[in-house]
Image 1: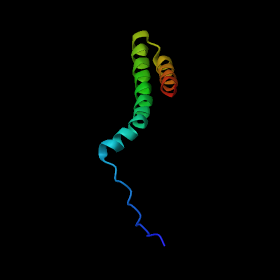
Image 2 (image 1 turned 180 degrees about the vertical axis):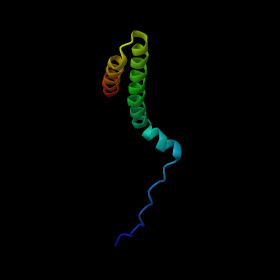
Image 3 (image 1 turned 180 degrees about the horizontal axis):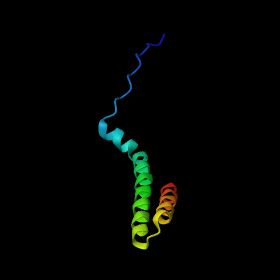
Image 4 (image 1 turned 90 degrees about the vertical axis):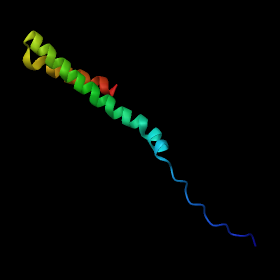
Length: 70
C-alpha cells in the first residue's frame, strides 16, 4: 500500500506579487476616472471661455466617458 502524503498548504503570496497581479485592474479604474474628470474640467474651462454654460461641460463629460471606456 502506498504511503499517504499530507496535503501541502497553499503558498502565501507576498504583497508585491499581489500588487503586481492587481495593477492592470487598478489602472483601468484610474483611467476611467481620470478621463471623465479631465473631460469635465476641460468642458468647464471652455464654457467659461466661450460663455456657453452647460453645453461644453456636458460634451466634455460625454467625451470623457467615451474615452475612458475605449
